[in-house]
Structures are given as C-alpha cells and as structure tokens.
Length: 198
Length: 142
Picture (cartoon, chains in turn orange, brown):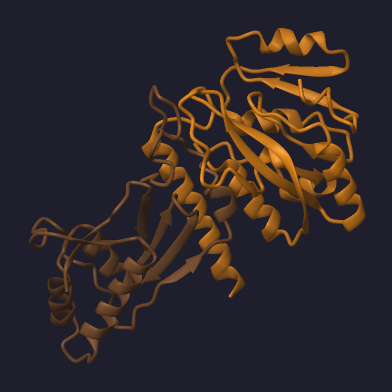
C-alpha cells in the first residue's frame, strides 16, 4: 500500500470500502491504525464524504484504491503547503497502464488537481464542503471549482504526486452518455461562476 | 459556406435559456455562446448548411446588416477551436429551425480552459477489451 510507504507518515488513514467485492476491506484491516468505513455502492462522492466526516487531521489527501503515490508524494506536498501557506497543493499526475496493449497518453504527465494529487487544509475543506453526490462524474472537478470560487489558494510541486492506473476496472468508467452529461453540468456551473465574476 | 458536423462524440453541449455551453472533453475546454450565437450553434451542430442558417437569420432580422459576415465568422471560430468540421452533402432537412432571440446582437464565442487540467486527464475512459487508449490511436481520442 503506497500510503504506508510514504516518507511522511499520515497521522490518520481512513479507508472507505464502497461495496467492493475483492479483499480490499480485509487488506485495510491488516494495517494497524487504519480506520475502515464500509458502505454499499454509494459512489465515489459519497465515499469521499463518508471519509471526510471522520477527519481530524490538519490537512487531507485522497487516494483511490487503484492508484499509487510515489514514496515522497505526501512529504513534498506537505512541505509546499506549509512553505507557501496555501490552502491547497497539487502535483504532477502520471498515468500508467497495466495492460500490454496500453500506449502512453499524450498527456501522461501533467500537473493537475485530481483528488489523488491534491492536499488541502481541513479549514479549506470546511469552507468548500463535501463532494456533490448528484453528479455521475466530475464531482471532484466541481469540488475544485467551489474551492476556487471560495477564493482559496493553490500551490503546486513539479514532482509526481500521483501515479494513476489506467485499466478496465477504473471507477471513472461508467455509461458514457450519463457521465458526459454530468461533466457538461460541471462546465455549466463553471460558466455560471464566470458570469458571476464579470 | 458549407454544412457542418460535430467531429467527435467527445463534444457535448446543452442549450438553456438562449445560451449554449459546449464542452470538448478532448481538450478539457468549454465554450459558450448566447443569443444569435446559440441559435447558430444549434443549427450548425445539427447539420444545417451555413447558407440556410444565414437565410433563416435574415428572415428573422430583415433590417440587420452584416448577418452573413457575422455568422460566417462565428462558424469559422467554431471550426478553429475544433467544435465543428465542414461536412459533405446537403443541408440536414431535419435540423430544427434555429431559435433566434428577440433582438439581434453580433454573436461571439467565449472559450475557457480553467478546467482543462482536470477534464483533459480523461475522467471518463471508454475502454474496450484491448484497454485504453487502444494501440495506434493515442492522439485520436474522438
């Protein structure tokens, strides 16, 4: 588990099992100090919100079950967040595949504000609120938009913060039309925010 | 002018209260146009020929000058940012009659990339048995 291999040890590790059918829950129980929350297919947003309800650390990072953090990911984000006195920090996302047929994305490495690559203060979380469970996709993008709309600040690191695994079981894959429409809703909200700033 | 088509199913749009919001998941950019521009987008994305769009607009706003230039410019902008591509063939007769606004204002297209870093990392993957992306089509994610 890449969380356990971090050079900066998290003060709190919360695992949300959203009805998985593999041995994820059993693996989580094997690690002392890990708090396991189990729910039945609430979706990604609900799972993250369930975890957030138990946070008492000063800063929060997210990691999906099929992704990885390089060993110094958390250390570098924590250091940057403290040094820059920002409300959130993000790093580079590197995509990799576990299929022999995988060809690297033309955007295999880029700094991006994905849940697995960000670290945000608990204070910022309290201002922004939880993830929107009504969205079939883009709930994290919507969350970042609300973060920006709250006037909160970001800093970034040039290092890889997240290694994002691309494979057929990635939880981002669902019915294309429904997810695309959800992302369109996120874009519409972003446009409304743009208009409000004019 | 030509007829047009939306070149990728990674481009999604909606038209609400006279404003079109168009999201291009390939780039992560979204674009907006309202009023006359939204009506042009609606018609062109459904395959209506540029000349037919101009004719419809002229019929709605007979006293306006410069309609052909404005619409041609807007269509060129749609093509330039990849939202439309010229299409062969006649105008799509089943395209809806454009919903022109009450008043004519020179149409424009606004483009935004503030979500691109997140959108462009492909939150949705259409994966087949081979995996994503398929070999040999790395750059074509349409």
